[in-house]
Image 1 (cartoon, rainbow, N blue to C red):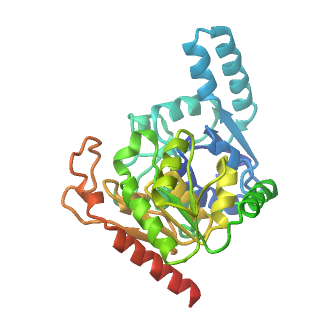
Image 2 (tube, helix red, strand yellow):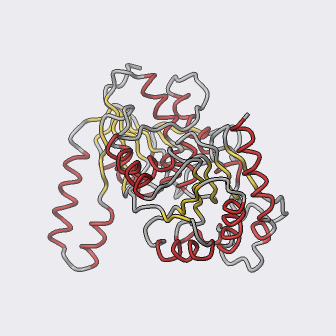
Length: 353
């Protein structure tokens, strides 16, 4: 089959899942250096994708604006926004559309685009019966495989012979300057420990207790190991302030950031500590040591894809699970402050060596 001239990649959200598609799309760029590669995404993650050299353009799906105007009864505005989006989506005729999301919404958008060849996951990985709508379907040997390696199956299917690589992103100069100014104005000195105790609103069951993060930060400060920054995102500022107060004097709250600025911040840190969340994958992409605390989610599928990553978890019989109403949260509660602190000491020792 002829080499494609126009390729559309669909992975709408969320941050972590989008980042775990990056190695596959980078591989496609190397396989098809002359192709025009577009990425269809939604939400704030589109901003950092737009800065990457392996993508030619990002098509932004305005889900938030569409939902907001529709709910408030502004139907004419909703129709105008949708019409403008569809015009952009259908501007090119794609030789190849790759759906790495595999849900009903991504399939609907795939069908609205002008594409000749459509590829998605088969029954092993697809949801919502989406496998029925692809002309070509890809399955793996086993279902429990890391998402980076799962996405690489698509690149391999299209002729890429390389193995999955670690995440890698570009940080733009404006974001770097913004973070440098923040560090200088707050007298933040190296080494810097980035602590992110949060997870998305629907994933609070994946969080290690805030009190334990406070104890951990106090240990870092008492050992004069370096500066500590509390990383936070939309809707998390109040709780981040509370953690800062709990941890005591000498702890900084990160400045407000978009994803590109957050990436630039993490790239200037020495160690990152957090749970199973998109920011953890962003830290991994920044090529810094990452200590990630895993509880109910499957670490085999979702761990940071980096040699600098340390996973702390408990092998309890009920993990992995998706029980958001678990009363004991044994998988997380059995992780002690001391073992996380020990992992930090080990990373520092390795860095000094």
